[in-house]
Length: 171
Image 1 (tube, rainbow, N blue to C red):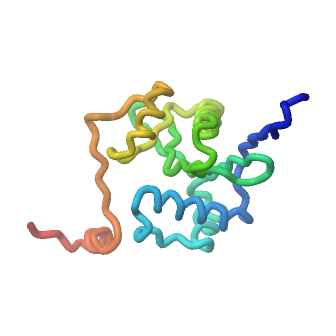
Image 2: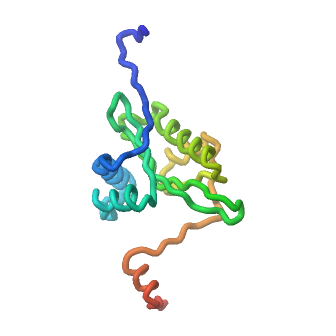
């Protein structure tokens, strides 16, 4: 094929393997930096190996161009009582800045949609930070609808441990 002297980038999306824990952690740290949350990353390769590959609590796909990882998505199953079936929840999606705008993010999301359909799941969902206008515009361009009536709540760290131990918050 004549490409006019330009190299053709070949995108491959593949399931991550245990040997990819270092790459996954690098993507997590870059995503945290983008989201200005670097101080919240406590994950290490050993934890990723344990929870993703040994306990199988999440899955990761890697987007590779010409054999080099340029993006990732981490996802897991949730369950809809109303639909009576599982869904796929996308926890993280990240594409290296120099590879954005080339359709790779869309290809990753399309692959996740295909996985959702192949597994007979009822829905595919994710959250996005309110300030992340580029991502919001991108998701809307795909036909994704925001869940405006819902607010996510979270217990973590000491608050989670204290609540689990029966220690009630006052005030």
